[in-house]
Image (cartoon, rainbow, N blue to C red):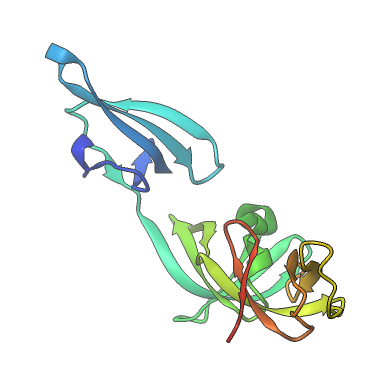
Length: 186
């Protein structure tokens, strides 16, 4: 159990049997009344934001989030199939639950799945991934009138701008938070 002094940004807690991530936490002194913690919480099941005030006497339960290393197998209609790499158990989840995270995982790629009470609630992506360039226009030497970038499509279907020297088959490093090109794999 957490006391209010233990709560800070990114801490996972459980309120009314729902997992939340603390987005913002601010300790406020009330003079003779003691201190309280005002926090913004993100519901990990539906993404809603909740403002909550915690009193000093409250004990807050940590959220029991299970991190499972899994392999992305395939997509079928609106379902996505993952396999636990330790137990080889396959799990189906609706595509809307994981959102655009699937765009950064190639088929056969590994990821960390977050589970709450045996239900998949999200995918934890690394800050960057390496993906292969599937389609792009050839860069013309001396073509620097524009910002020296061209459009490309990666193996997962993501479209982004890359420098002119990137060719089909190259592997590029992509930031999963912003969706931008970082560098070519060395």
